Image (cartoon, rainbow, N blue to C red; front, side, top):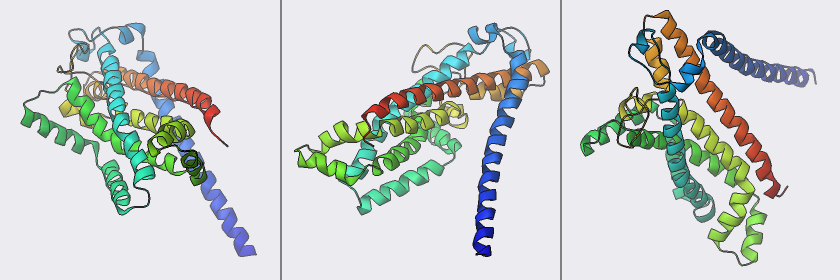
Length: 282
């Protein structure tokens, strides 16, 4: 009895310690970004593109990087969503419990663990072979490949949680697999599907390695799919690499903007997920 009590106390302390460590890490990151970045953040930084000598501490802003990051992440998330949802549906409704489904899940897990720099290098190699320059389109494709396994596996796990009785009831009423997928499965898992898309979006908008070779960088606003585009992670990287203290402070301001974008989208998605739960059968 004493042994069971000791084990319970140990694992309870471990859980509490892990929770405190996670929350402490989050608070530390947010506090550092706010403390270092907020003094350097101003309206001009959010509404202007870099001027001549911006990376030497002169005038300008990061509007090009803000718009570029949104274009890259939104485009990649849409592409990944178009591919991920059918994959998740197929694995659960058409190839459930089959060897092909298990192999597909294994492949997605492996792709999830591949470093983002590898996606960038492979994308860059393909672009060289096709004769395509670093561009917004190249960055979107590289980020979509990066987001795909994250989104697909998240949706796969969400759809797998649906009770079999619910799908069987749909079949019993004469619905086809496709009708069951779109009219029952999607409605039941909509909040979880939105969460999976958000996780992938957060990974995409904060990734620098995969767009370093494929999207390039420019001080101008994006005006073409075939032109280079700036991004906030690379803006932070380039500004931290300068020897000027004022520019380094701007790097933390850029990181603060990136964090605020992700936080804002998280709050909006949670609000939408709350409304989507109206269709979920408890």
